[in-house]
Length: 95
Image (cartoon, rainbow, N blue to C red):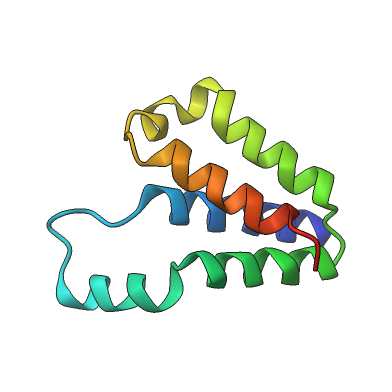
C-alpha cells in the first residue's frame, strides 16, 4: 500500500506542475481550479505522508522530476520549475 501512496505523490506533483492546457473545457478548468491548487496538493501529499511515505521520499520524487530524462518534456514548460519550487517549500515548511 505504501507503494501506491508513493505513486500517488508523483501523480499529484506532476498534475500540479503541468498546469492546465490552454484549450481546456470549462469542466476541466473548474476541476483544475478545485483540485489542483497548491494547498490541495500539499494536503494530498500530507495524507500520503501520514500513510507511510517519508518526507525524504517526497523530496526524492521532486528531485527525480527536476533532473530525470523521463520528465524532460514536462520541464520544457517555463512554469514548471517555479511551481515545483513553490510546492517543495510548502511541503518542507514546518507545521
